[in-house]
Length: 542
Image: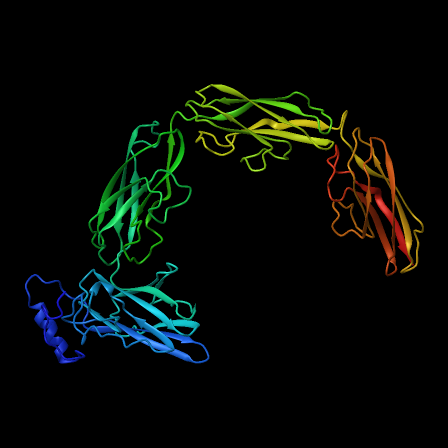
């Protein structure tokens, strides 16, 4: 834009009666927008603290007769060359072409009712590093205007009337970009969102109608509205949108209706959302309320599949350690619509039914299933040590199929019991505990001998045995043990004795315990009887 076109010759600072005169000239023009603010400036000071404080100030201004382009060096004032050391704040304006910049003062046309201006500025640390602080001189800005700072690095927004940006670490040579918006800002909100039916058929076009409202005091310029077929949480940007609708502008207090057409190819449950200004082009009073409806629009696409594990069988439910067994699982689609191909997963042992393929022992792919169709998956697996296990099978562990019920994909009910160890599983107990002395003196060393027996029907692997000077109740893990010793593998019915030496520091009554397999490395038929003796061994120190 020309530096002289449409200008009124004005004093260098434009204060006092000359302001009134110039405003009167502007107001006399037929068809011109009515200004809502006289001339003002908003100085922004950047300070960097190191061993000393460096600072620089740039001013965003509204000035009678100024334009949104370059207005000459007396109005849009250039910045001095960068100092050897310090900080520099400026308005870059590369779009002004050959005009020498950057600028320390950037004057714009007066704000008109319902509008706003945005200044982009940069802060540069010149051969220095430290903590940078931004301060803003808001005293000249009319109280009717909102002032918003946006950090273009972090995306953080600050309403400068209520909050200020935190101090920022700066490195030498670093440049950081910001936007300063002043005016009466819009506030875009998605109101009602509706569809002809919340239960469409797969492949059927579905019309989505949404109302977008501008609840702010300022007008919104052109923006986009976006629809999302399914998201678990509200959208914040247009990434992943299923469709878009352009809105030219929306005045303060007004609303507009937008429509989309979406198609769901697979039956299931979905949460639909609509988002206004998904590209974040519009500076708003609040950027957190652009989506709707509140919790999303819940849709159930009819004729959905429902995969279940209808049966699980094992070639052997009591294998020996290392013996390979075959698991056969029948997957049935008990829903009313077809399912896509998916994966079926097996789990050697879980205490509860699985809900995802994490930790699976094997997988098997099945094809598409029509309603009421079935397919059998087979797995080969083995167990490395004796013990009691609960085997599970899970259909669609990767959640590829959208189903009418996502909570019933595991089976069989309660899991399939597998007992490894020939004829059974081990069961470690403390069959006897004796102390060389049960009434020692303080700090007197005593010897404790404990016999560990495998009273189960299968062999046990090596494990640890732990002693506890005093506990009020039987221990269940090796946490807090006073000592430990290792024992080897025990066949069914076999025993092994371990010894510990310990002492008590002071007189008193104590209850001593011994715990077999305190680290839980052996899978047993009974995991609750590893501590002994019953009630503990009473030690009286006098």
